[in-house]
Image (cartoon, rainbow, N blue to C red; front, side, top):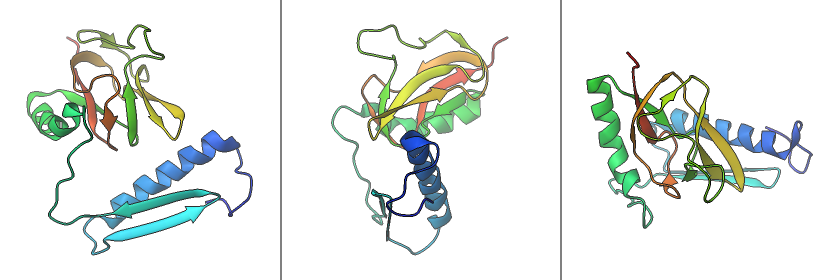
Length: 160
């Protein structure tokens, strides 16, 4: 991490990306631990992680896709479909800007590394890229949905 009050090397966007990556790693390390609340602050950026035992926090209004996503992911493993997941928490967009054509539609064939959506976090637009080639079998989130880290956004099926 960068020292507090110093200018992050590589610019603010790279710093935010680094913070998100470290936060994801921290969440993974805390899995299975007894830690219920954790907070860290560096260079004006604060990350708070809180676990609420035995409680399911409902998604924000208008995010039906968020609630259905885990079941869709489990089913995808059984039928050979591959989930494209959110790289971070934020707002999912299917197009580069309002009114523009969506990056992909169901039935489209995508290449590995192709942008299939955007997740906005902390006013930064983060491209979601397909991590393998395939045909878009199902889009699980609608434009403007709040998405969680590693939530499936769409499912890819092998191209024959």
